[in-house]
Image 1 (tube, rainbow, N blue to C red):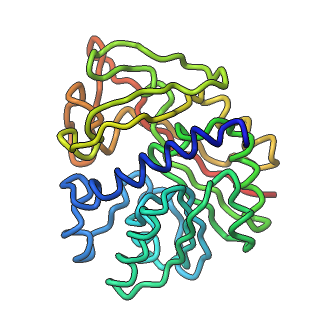
Image 2: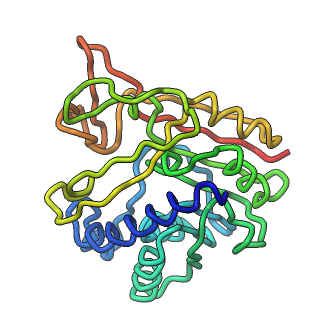
Length: 267
């Protein structure tokens, strides 16, 4: 972990700054959320089991919209995120709504330093593993925090989506992880491209094989795996809306895989 600490520190500063922008953005639509609208997408809503009365750990929760949406489904939620500002905002939103989810600031690769409880469900979604250098460390934390028979649920952008420079509409990144981060400085954020922010971000590529094998190596049994030809979010101007929450990117009329979903059980 020490070899990555400078990258984590830089990314924490980045997400602390992004949080203030995202809370106010149209993308996250706080006004609608505060009125009761779920921030969860139809992929996870269709695939999740009944969460009523289930203890749930949400990994990399940003500022807590999805965590609180999961609480609205009946889960007893705990969530962790690297961003101190993100966790602060999550607590503010929770308290304003009179809700009960617990929010913890810390590195998800060291979750067991901050959270000792075991959970019925561990949950993570969309744009999270790209910020992690080593999925074996990540999968170990997933397994440690699950009860026997517990469910790990993941919805994530497909590895092929991270091959592209969307501004140039061309392949620009390796598919396979060589251990070294990409370091980029970009203007704005995905939630507000016009935002006044320009900071370095450090991210890593992960092929699907690394995702699956890291979980298998920790003794989790993958019971369901699906790929989708659409994203629930418009990732760039290259994507066209097909129907509600379905944005499709096509090459010569052929849609690429955009998202995958998996479920795994701790035996």
